[in-house]
Amino acid sequence: MPSGHDYFNKASFGANLLTISVGHTLDLVEAVLGAIIEVDARMEILWPNVKLTDIGEESSRETADHVDVLGKTRS
Image (cartoon, rainbow, N blue to C red; front, side, top):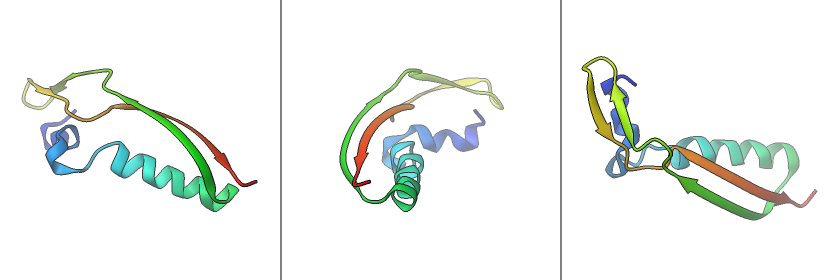
């Protein structure tokens, strides 16, 4: 990834897969299928080292890059 996007890998910035993508996805699920009443989720770092393509360096990932969510809606 470009070095300008490396902040997605750092926990201190708060911009990561869970806070951005999963939240918006669950919002869409609720809009289409109704309220979510049960959720089971797992997060994991599958690729702990990220190559910053524009500067040729590596960065350590501190946030999950893989999320599995199993949920149940009222409907």
